[in-house]
Image (cartoon, rainbow, N blue to C red):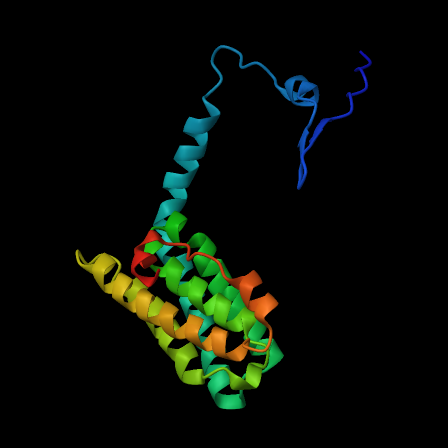
Length: 196
């Protein structure tokens, strides 16, 4: 059977943006109805997730060890582009995976470290002590994630690190107000409401 050529997407133009609505027909054609006896795909995915969940802690610990090794490399040899990239990518992995792996409180600290590494114009000016504080906070939150008071502890750590990081970024980018405005973003956690 020859399928019909998909129609062009609908485009609605406004004064400052456009909304493009694609043709839904290609998606409908890709759907295959379930046959009796097929296992529910969502149930299959949930079973797979449960089977993998015993490895979640190990994955997060591995990320913390990579972050610690990159931090130690930076302390031993200075912050180079290579170990900055490792720190940035590993903290970004932690930020992205923390909630899924059961360590949600580590994500905001990892986000703060990402911002520090990504938005400081001169790497040589980044304090290794501030990197240490972020890495140690992430590792402590992961290590202590089963404590009943971990959310409160993580919030205090995160708020303080975020304040110091944002003040540092404001100082380092003071000659670039347009860049500073562009990187100003709300934190990824609502726990930062007191920073407003």
